[in-house]
Amino acid sequence: MSINAAAPSGQLKWVDLRSSSLKREVDKATHGVTGSSAAAFTAMLQQAAGTSQATDSSNKSTYVALSGASSMDNLLWQQLGEAAESNQDISGEITQTVPTDYEELIQTASAKYGVPVDLIKAVIDTESSFNPNVVSSAGAKGLMQLMDGTANGLGVSDPFDPAQSIDGGVRYLSYQLKRYDGQEKMALAAYNAGPGRVNKLGVSSDAELMANLSELPKETQAYIAKIERARAQFAV
Image 1: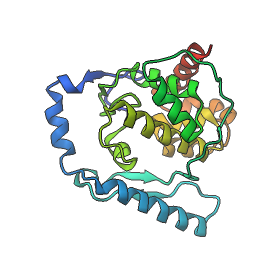
Image 2: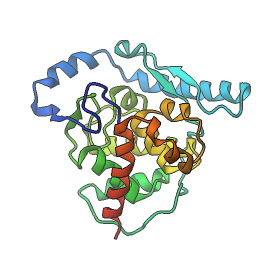
Image 3: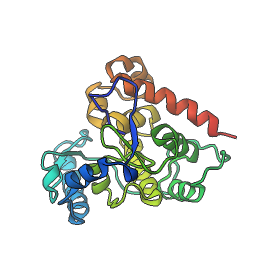
Image 4: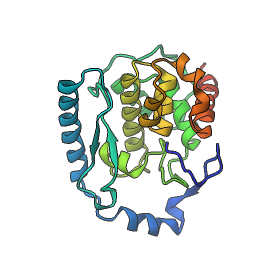
C-alpha cells in the first residue's frame, strides 16, 4: 500500500518473506518494536484530534509522531479524521460477490467498519492477489500490504496473519473513506500513496481527483484503475 520509489513505475515486486533470506533482514529492522507502540499511537491520535479541532475545525490532517519504536522515530502519522468505528455503510455496497478463501474475515470486517465487501476484495486482490505471505519491495506485507509502521499503529502484530491483516487494513481504509467523506477514489489514492499526497492536490471530490490524476505517482494512477477492474470482477 506504499510507493517504492526505487521500483519501476506501476510495478510491485513481491517475495515470500517466510521462505526468503530477507526474513532475517526484516527481523533486524523491526527488532525493538514493542506492543506499547499501538497504545502510544492511539493516545496520540486522540490527543491530535482534540488539538486539531480546537485550533482549526476545517483541518483534517494533523501529523503526530509515533513513539515507542526506535526504528520508526521519524515516522509521521496522519490524523485520520473521524476515526470512530461505524456499522453504517460508507457507500453503496454490492451485497452479492464472488466468494474467496477469506470470506468470513472479509464479511466480518465489512460489517464492523462499514466498508463494502466488493471493495475490500478488490483491494486485497490488487494489493496481494490473495497471497497472505507476500512482501513488496517497499516492505509492505500481507493480504492488505501494510507497512510496518501502519501495522504497528493499528495494533497488527503479525501482518502475515490474514485475520489481523484484513481487520487492520479495512480499518485503515475506513479511516480514509471517513476522512474524504466517502469519496472512494480519494480514499484509495490515500491508501496507496498516503493522505499527504492527496491533500497536496487540494481536491475535495473524486471528480476533482480524476481531473488532477496526472499529479499523483504513476503507480497510484494505475492502482485506482486496477481497483475498479477488480471490483467489477467480484460483483455477481
